[in-house]
Length: 432
Image (cartoon, rainbow, N blue to C red; front, top):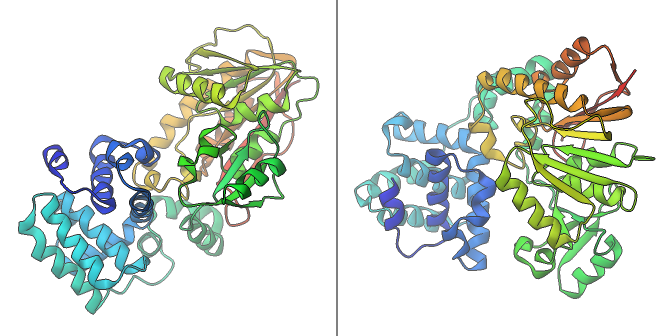
């Protein structure tokens, strides 16, 4: 596969999409790494836009596309070369979900077999795609986990859990919302400007922006490649999900002087905490990943965030700090299953068997983090997961084993069918 990847000539958005999707499946790359993928960076803006839409769209609808391939080809996917599977997924996605003319979508997919030196599969790709145009397969009906996993391209095990906890109506609403595009929301960097001032700068630059009333420091951006725009690269704002922002807005920081943000990288919540406590507190940021923490420091420098300190630390073992923090945020490493709308690749990476491992790690981090909270202080435990094993079960097991800890207020939850952001959970814990 790697050899074929290097042999691609005349790269375009579709070829780069196939290259990157193959990289995800063979090397474990994250979809968020697309913007730093060298072949992607070499594309002109319109092809970058196409590659982005194709990568996200194919992964968001992979289960449905795979069903089509199996029905139309009469083969198990594991018996088809994986490059060809990605080419078929891409072609079917264009035919079913985009406005690409049918003839062009089929032609481009067939051409991809030649770009990847697999011309012998051209007739097979052509036959599958034209078969879809003649008569697309009927999707399974009903509300079973198996049927919904095809229609909405979510893992069957995850849908079964949704159905058990939420029932059919709420599950359907959640699945439908998970398959929509996330809101293009940026958080304005208050160390540079305010939302109104930044909106004026955007308008002068010809970038459409709308206020977001629920978060006055945020704007909805209508621009196809804003992450490459000079105003974005200047550090004046950063993309951040609405629910993720609300986690950093939720705690009362009145009287707080020492803040600990554990598992801090890539830094969005720390930057919000830094602004909210500017001239009053220092935010100490720690993370187990030295490279991610270094990237966070670079971002903070560009954005002009000064009241931060940094340390590499593994919070699954006792923290190397005394009981010094008034407030601690534990944005715990989790499955990310609450972000499958923004990060559709997670659907195909996480298995149900992973949940106990995450639970044990989260519990260890929570226990160690609480030990450095002052007796008058508070800790906010948060995840971007929908699953109880990572949320309530972690907090309840911690409280059962820590007689000095108490839940300060009801759990905070967001669900995308009733909220513009992703699915988040938070619990505020204090000392008795």
